[in-house]
Image (cartoon, rainbow over all chains, first blue to last red; front, side, top):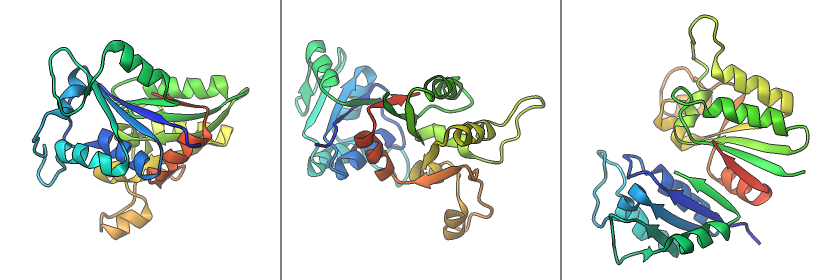
Length: 107
Length: 128
């Protein structure tokens, strides 16, 4: 069985979406991936974001594509941002996601 | 005994994370196996061979190279992140007509597929 990875995103969106590229690449190689956005990282989930650089990738479009890569678990913990598009997690639920993953990588 | 992969994501010149990662390797290499060091995001800048530190300091790329040779560790650098930041090997420099390659010979440009191997064959991925 492949080991699983949780990508923990704590930083706000960046011009190059390297955190999401990392997640999609892992999923493309059939690694089970969970995406957890915490604090300012939750702003990646804001709808209809345009690319932050000319010719760049939109975080919204990358996230929309994540289900095609088999990433179904996308959650967030934030006091200042809410969305119904992704799972809002309690601290306890987020801890469970972290503890149940083989590896955790933070961006 | 455990198998480790080190994932370095921090910039080499604005934090001490690379030094900490090297200390981790020296401390753990006797009892554990370091499968590889994978450089991602701004950490790839460590692989630039054209570093000229101030007098009396050693170039970080050389420090990584010596450590990797001592412990038989592969230094894997994300190719997409590297090209974005101007780090090229001979092939990529020729492909994009970028002039002389600047990747230190101790490092290797690899795709993220290498990182998926790390996920599956390492007991722990330790990030710096």
